[in-house]
Figure 1: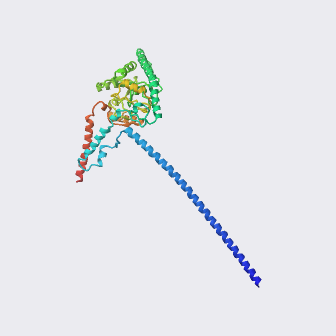
Figure 2: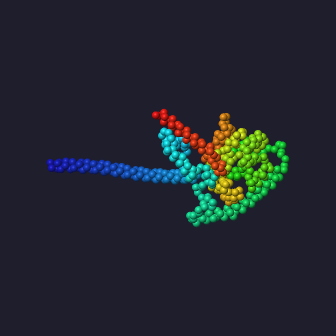
Figure 3: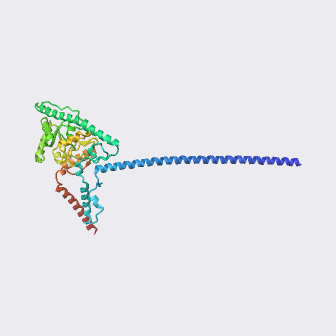
Length: 427
């Protein structure tokens, strides 16, 4: 009996041990799965953290690059547009939010602000000085107050002086002297030949290149404008009579073609008749005119004189844009003589420019010469990447016309009268 009981107890104990073993195995498996899940979750979090930190660093670098680029663009715009940042708004728009009712003493602030801006940095005077560059182009005249930054930069600057003055200057003087002597002698010889009855001008013309009987108008920066355009075509020039070296070249050119030269004191009607007679003859070369009437520093296009657009005929706009990084082509005739300007060009690195022949334009019906001139000016400025200014380039030689002052006074009177009418209607 005792043996039977003992066997039954042993069997039950073995079953319980087996159940406990199975339970422990299941528990171990469950805990192992939990450990694996926890480990995978931690690794996934680490990967996400690394990816997030990488994208955060990349975004920070992109933002910093964008900020640097915006600062560089702001600096470039500040240098090219002046020390004062002006809002391109009219008098009506700027005074609309400040005025309430009729005339008030606060209106004086607008005119005082404009006056101070004009005294500090006006838009006209800046156009008759050399363009300010963002970076130094290793020309001594662009860095008058020289400060030693490093010996490497000083060495490059001195090497540039030796190259420009000892190599380029003698070579260019010899080439220029030979060219002028050849021009004078060749034009004198060609002027003795009779005109050919069946002469044709063969040229490799571009699509929008000026044709005979038309008028070619371009922005004016330098006397080099004529040489650049003449190297790609033949024109009859319209310009002021000069003396000295330029006068010698003009007289030589007059022997080979019929150019229209005039004095500034010449009657405008007489000048207009001469241009109309030239255009009426379709066998003559196209006229080359610079409607600004003076040299501008190639950062903007100033007012086009309407006389060039009263002649009639087809207008062929041409945009000329120089690269000032290699040399300053602007001729400030009030500051530099012809020989000084020539020496300035000969000691520069190079004269680089781009010329665009724009599609021909014709005056529309019921369009006066002033609006037609403004339309042509806007097309040239847009192509050359230059700003449009309504001011007359002749302001560097004479005072502001009374008509400009009267125009501003009329604008202000219209604003005051409108506000007065509104105030009366409100009351």
